[in-house]
Amino acid sequence: MSRVKGDIASINIIDSQMEVGRWMELLRHKSPETYQHCVRVALLAELMGTALKYDNRQLSELMQGCFLHDLGKILVPQEIISKTAPLSAEEWTIMRLHPQLGAELLENHGGVDDAIIRLVHSHHERWDGRGYPQGLAGLQIPLNARICAVIDAFDCMISVRPYRRRMSVEEAKDELIKHSGKQFDSEMVQLFLKVFIKFPEMYLQ
Image: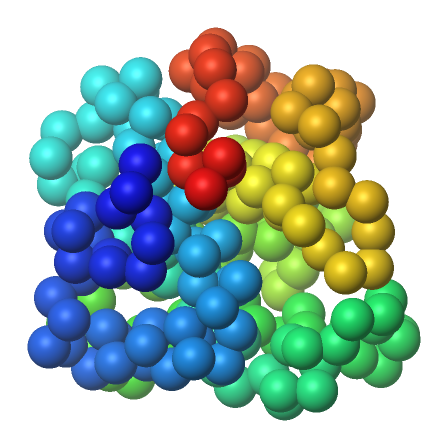
């Protein structure tokens, strides 16, 4: 998937002329790793939406939301975004603001579908109600946010991070299963494992 090399316009996620597109360009310059993570999450979301038989509008909302899920990190201090060691408790408190910050940016901008904003706001909620920012649980969490949570975690686990070992695909799948019904929606985990049949080429780039 050569399209995963930074040209987000090639997968028709968002109009590059929009202010939101410019914000994502800021994220790309601030943290290329985070930006590429957002691209991969959006591409994997396409597999999930297709498996759920989403129509074009629903699929677009899911993919756009997944692409924008870390938008709020443009407002997180650079020293936290770029830190190569584990974050302190205080730094984690700041980092955990990014879903709310991203949702507020989109709300204030106007013209962004509510479904996209809800995904951005809720992608760190947990099935067991121990997530953030609202502590939503189970079906209170929007479906697209539950989908994003699974993909987001999977991509983070199998990606290179300076402060921990990169997991293998099988190890990451085992972690999803382990936390199914606690951190993640069990049905979305099972669907992801079904659609993620082989190691996508984008992870070999």
